[in-house]
Image 1 (cartoon, rainbow, N blue to C red):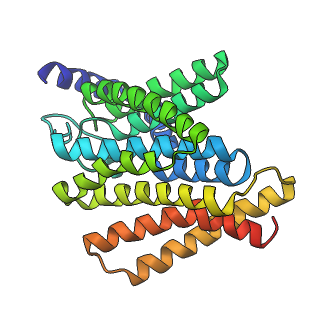
Image 2: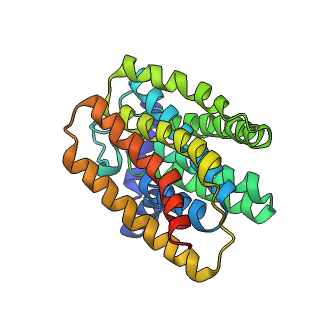
Image 3: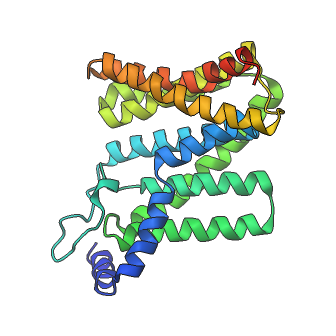
Length: 280
C-alpha cells in the first residue's frame, strides 16, 4: 500500500491543468449514464442485437462491480496523507475494483469482439489503459483497483459474450433468469441502495429482453428519419417515465429496486413497442 501511495503522490507532483483536463475527459467519457444511453440508442436505432448484447455485458459488469465493492469494502486512497484527490463526484462507494475501469473494459472489449478489426483493438486498448490510468492520476483509486477491474471486466465480458450468443442462437431466454438469481440474492445480503439500483436495472433489462423478443420483435431496418425520431422519442419518453417514478416512489429499498427495474424494462420493451405503434 505504501508503494502505491508513493506512485499516487508522484503523479500528484507532475499534475498540470492540461493533463488534468485530458484525464478527466477520459474519466467522464465512460460515466455509466453516458454508456447506457449510447447503448440504448444503438439498440433502438442501429443494431438491435449488438445493442442488446452491449447492454447485457454492461449491466452484468456494473452489477458485479457494485457487488464486489460492497462485499470487499476496500477503502479508497481519498484522504491519505499528503494526497489531494480530484473530481470526487466520480468517486463514490468503495475502491476495489475500479468501476470506471471495469465499464471501460466491458464497453471496448464488446466493441472488439463485435467488429474484430485491428483498429478497434488498438483504439479500445488505448481507451482502457487511459481511463484506468486517469483514475490513478486523479487520486481516487489504487493501481490494484485498476488492474483488478481490467481482469474482472475482461473475464466477465468474455463469459457474457458467449452466454448471450448461446441464448440468441438457442432461444433459451430462461438462462438469463438463472444468471440473474445470484445477483438478486445478494440484494438481500447487502441491503445497499447503490447495489439495489443496479440490480434493479439488470433485472429490468432481462425481463424487457424476454418481453420484447416474444411480443414486440421490432427491427432497426428503418429510414434515417425514423431512426432520428426513435432516438428523440426514446430519450424523451424514458426521461419522463423515470421522472414520474422518481416523483411518486418513496425512498424505500424495495421501491428503489422496482423504480430502476421498471425504468430499464420500459427502455428495452415498451419504447420499441411505441415505435411499432407510431410506425417509425
